[in-house]
Image 1 (cartoon, rainbow, N blue to C red):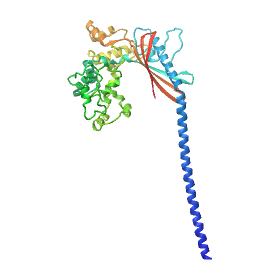
Image 2 (image 1 turned 60 degrees about the horizontal axis):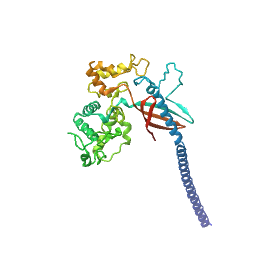
Image 3 (image 1 turned 30 degrees about the horizontal axis):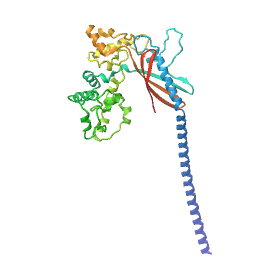
Image 4 (image 1 turned 30 degrees about the vertical axis):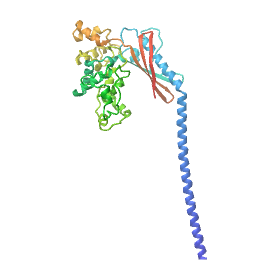
Amino acid sequence: MTEFRRVSKFVQQGQAEQRGIALIIVMLVIVTLSIMAGGLAYTMRVETRLAGNGGMDSEFEWLGRSGMELAKYALSLQQEPYDALGQFWASGVWDPLGEELPEISLTDNELGRGKFSVKIVDLERKFNINIADEVILNQALNLIGVEPGDVDVIRDSILDWMDPDDETHLSGFESDDYLSMVPPYYGRYPYFAKNGPMDDITELLKVYGVTPAMFWGSRIHEKRAGIQVDSEMLDQEMLEEPPYLLGLADLFSTLSHAQMNLNTAPMEAILLNPYVDENMARDIISFRAGPDGVVATEDDTPFQSVGEVSSMVGGSPQAASLMSRYFNTRSVNFEVYVQVQIGQTTRIFKGILRRSSPVDIQLIHFSWDQ
């Protein structure tokens, strides 16, 4: 009888252990299925959202193009013989001067299921890199704060990149130098020099000596995440290079006209003119802002001609000629950003407008950033 009880107790313990193992297995299966179900649900939500966004592609594009058309209209309203930061296209402040014109806004324009906002920036506030000479490049590199010992190499390398031959400037770099560079410099070599005008200002990043920090200036922090590192110590030094407050991208463009606009160029760009010192540049900025010193207010006094500023550099015909070599008071090319929002999704469209006259404004580039 005692033996029977012992066996019965042993069987009961075994059954309990089996039930415990089964319970654990069931719990593991439930957890696994829950994870799989959650993953599937998340994937389905992502796929559904992507499908929805894909289905809205055409709607986004047409809203973006609508923004470009609004930008064209804003530029066509400009009737003064000069362009300035206080005008509607730049400030977004619409003053119809009592005319019976519709109310216009560059922000939060609702259309269909979405809305869009427009920002217009003239490119003549920067100097065209493709016509920059040794003097302008020296001014730019010194303004940025490049080490004096590096200025000659970078300046001559930029000139070599753009000139049509393979003859090397005294301190510059040409195709043979890029092709023979060992080890690869910042992971960007070997390749040929452009030997022609730059199509995009980011080509400067391919020029020997130009670092990302030197190019982007204070914006390097937001750009570093996208910089690819292929080599070791040199690249690491570049990434750890202290940022400059000013970058080449702040001073130069590839689409701007031959002269900068005196009414829109920032002080740093004005200082690219070798005949203008800091005091003169400060006077120019102060004059165009008007008595209150604030840009885009009613008392702004923008320059209507370059002749008005000649007195600041001596007042002589020679001084006026030197100023007109570098400056104008009109803008021709404009960079347009259109922010489009449909539901919770936002896209930024970018376009380039070229205005030959108020009735001839052409869209020469249109794209969007994902």
